[in-house]
Length: 90
Image: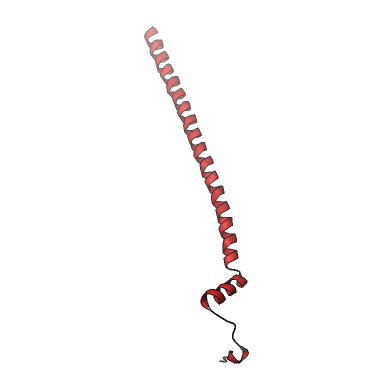
């Protein structure tokens, strides 16, 4: 009877140790994943800020007045005279 009780006690002790190790490992993994999540959220926030800056820059470059100035300065384009304009009808 004592041998059975001793065996049962040993099995229960091993089960408790395995369970405790499992809890420690799970908490460690949870912390590692939380750190990764925080890093990714920070990266997302930085990318959102950069995206906003790029949208603003694109809006600035696509402004019609700016395009007109660039066309005149770099390409030598000019507004046509009224006598140079032709109306095409179908």
